[in-house]
Image 1 (cartoon, rainbow, N blue to C red):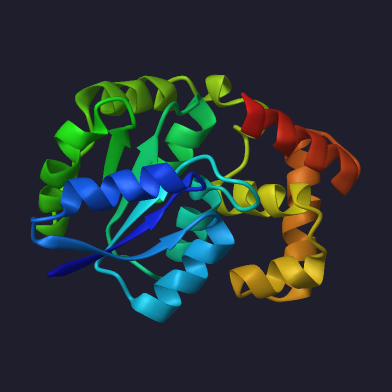
Image 2 (image 1 turned 60 degrees about the horizontal axis):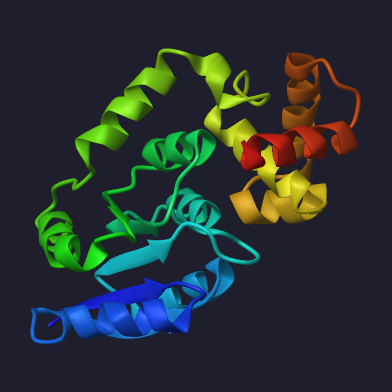
Length: 208
C-alpha cells in the first residue's frame, strides 16, 4: 500500500478521502488539521504523498508546502482546495506542487491524480497552468509583494505571523544577521521603513 497523509481541518473531508481510497493501492496513514500538525505527522509517519488542504487555521497549506520545500523535502504534495487566489497559486507553483484538486468533484479525480504524482508526473489542471502563466507575465497582479523574490516573500509571511528575526532564521536555516540584511533590502524594494509596514503588506497580499 502507498501511504498518504491527509491534512484538512474538516474531519468529514478526511473521512471522505479515506472512503474514496478504500480498495485502492493508496492508504491513509494519518490525518492532520493544520500546517503544524501536518509537518509533525510527516516526520512521524513518512507518507509517500501528502494531500494538503490549502486553507487551514494557523499555518495554512501554502505555508506548510513552502516549509517542506525549504527543508529540502521533495515528496509529492497534492493540494485540495475549494478556491485558490492568485497569490496562493503562484506560491504553490513556485514551491513545486505536484497536483491540485478542486474539492468540487474531488471523488472523481483523487485516485487519478495520486496515481500520476506517485509515478513522478504532475497533475495540475490546464486551467490552473494557464492562469499561472498569465500571472507570471503580469507580475503586478501578484499584489504588493511582487517586487520580492521567493525567499523574501517567505520572510515577509513569517514577519506577518509575528515571528522575531531569530525565529525566522531558525525556521529558514539562516543566521539572525542574514535575516536583518534581507529585511533591509526588502524595505528598500518596497519603499517602507519597518516590519509593521511589511507585515501589513504581507497580510494584504495573502488576502488578495
